[in-house]
Image (cartoon, rainbow, N blue to C red; front, side, top):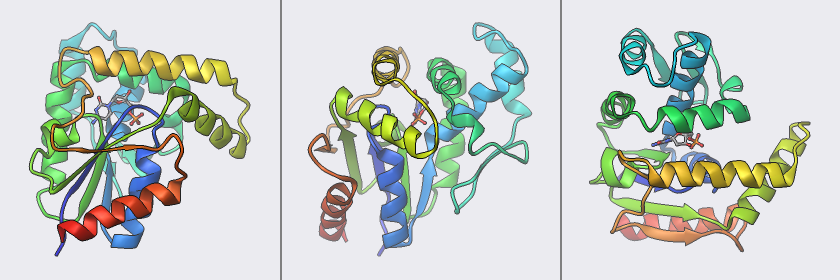
Length: 218
Ligand code: DC
């Protein structure tokens, strides 16, 4: 039997990494909803649309195609944007566009359509609360800001990117503030979510812990 799993939590808490590993063990499909907000941000930037101009953003959304493939690729209007949506600039702009009610409604409808069946692991900010309120297992994955900044720093280093730990920490704090204080579907823990604080855990510890929770459910 397959279930649906919602993983929410703040930026850089390891949601996507953990979701990917769980999917390969369980043979589930990963839906990274943050990538969809990032695609909207990239298109807003490319089309030079003012973030306050909601009418133009809605028009743009209606003519924009976003696809997530099972092998983890992200396509925006058939272009592979998997890597270019990961810059700091797009991270912050994604957080900005995610405050717009019309953007959220559009993407939530797409996400719900994508996960009509079972066997999905969806990660984001509002999955357990809004997108999949009936998910059989809900995880709220978090870690201290220091631990999250350090992981991002090491990740960047591995990819050959120079970054500054303090700058990363500030950016994470800025996104945390915006994502938890926005008016529409702010990041918050679902009442029935299991909180996993990974500050002192490595990736495998988190994956194994969640696998035990999955076993209990099925
Ligand atoms: O998970 P991420 O860092 O790739 O997400 C980028 C931004 O998108 C994040 O700052 C908040 C927003 N987001 C959201 O509001 N709701 C989601 N379900 C996923 C992401």
